[in-house]
Image (cartoon, rainbow, N blue to C red; front, side):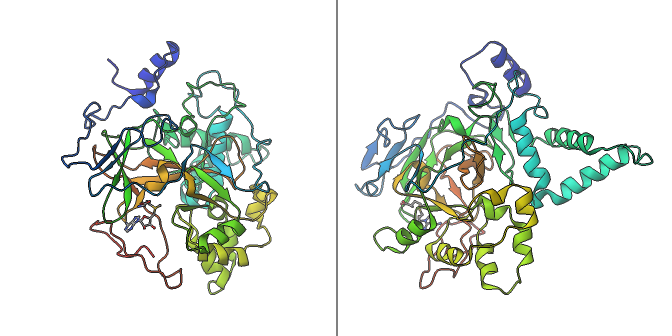
Amino acid sequence: MFTDGERLHAFLYQTQSLLSIRQFTFDMNCRVTQKFISPNTAFVNLEDYTSGKDNVPIMLVNEIDSKLPKPFDYVTERIPLTSDIVMDKESIKGCSCLDGCIDTTKCACWQKTYDGIIQSHYYEDLIGSLKDLFQQSIDIEDDTIDHTEEMRLFLYDALSKRNFGYKHGRLLEKIHSGIYECNGKCKCDSRCINRCVQFGLNTLLQIFNTSEKGWGVRTLYDLPAGTFLSFYAGEILNDEDANRRGTEKSMGDVYFTALDFITSLKPTFLQKKSKTSQSDEHMSMLNEDHQLTSNELYNLQLNGNKQPSTEEKHRGLSNYDSGVYVMDAHYKGNVSRFYNHSCSPNVFVQNVFVETWDVRFPWVAFYTTSSIKAGTELVWDYSYEVDTVENRVLHCRCGSDECRHRLL
Ligand SMILES: C[S@@+](CC[C@H](N)C(=O)[O-])C[C@H]1O[C@@H](n2cnc3c(N)ncnc32)[C@H](O)[C@@H]1O
């Protein structure tokens, strides 16, 4: 009997168990064996909508009528639409850990995640106060000593104690500056604690007809907080193709998700622009949890060619073109294309880097914000900006008490 995650992980690691810590929970409210059974009659009931293409079967039920979703190719990858979309997979580095990356302060991949936090404007206050603490702990009288490396290690240690990143296979807090998982160049193996999204789907989900919002996704079992659900699979489009598809009536931007991690890393760049400038407005619409609308994309394209700021150069962001890429799951996609919006979401989005550290191409991964009961719909906040798309109004039907009433 294990009462804490550390001991359980050590046991699984040492015994080279095929079980993963992600298959366990210490959340006593989670009834792990009790499957959700809908009381309604189903007109359609498919055991595996993916036809074996995903890691685990995904059921589909329709309790409203006998329709199915419009056909599309079920894929479990991210597929560049055109040959000009090339990810930089060369500059990725691996760690040399042999302990399953338990000591996160020594793992090069965790350090990459920590470095992102240290440099990100989101964590300015936290990092500032940690740096103050460090200053207080050293001998400031002797200014001949360079404390840079010592401070770096101090910050890594402090961040690891605050549980940034995966904890026993769960992600309890979003990391705005991205997560860098261990990868194919690392010495660690699949038992490493810094690998999650790369294993793909492993929870049992069900696609169902919500009636007011079209198809949606619910969980068939209770899920603890921070559980990884799935990542957004589909086609990667450049801005030109996204514009074309987004404005075509037969396609539209319904299944678009912006890969706008770069824009979320550019605070200096945004702040430097005049508040009233048109480009500023368009850039500020793009936060990292944002499903891109075609108009926004068009405007971004018009205003997107800027000189890199000092911060961009510092973080190596200027190594890449300034294009914003979009994931489109209209023709090719996975279960993630069916997650609906809610103004009180129970799912959050995390940018994760797996086989590439190219900041233009993070994996858009979905995790639970809190523990969720079997049968509950899984919903995230699309963060659309109302009135940004001409002649388009989309009323929100999330039903939450905090509903903002309009999606667009
Ligand atoms: C990414 S798709 C989600 C899956 C979609 N329901 C389906 O049937 O394929 C986004 C679309 O779902 C609908 N939708 C999602 N959340 C909604 C909400 N809270 N209120 C109204 N419609 C919603 C809207 O039509 C939106 O354009």
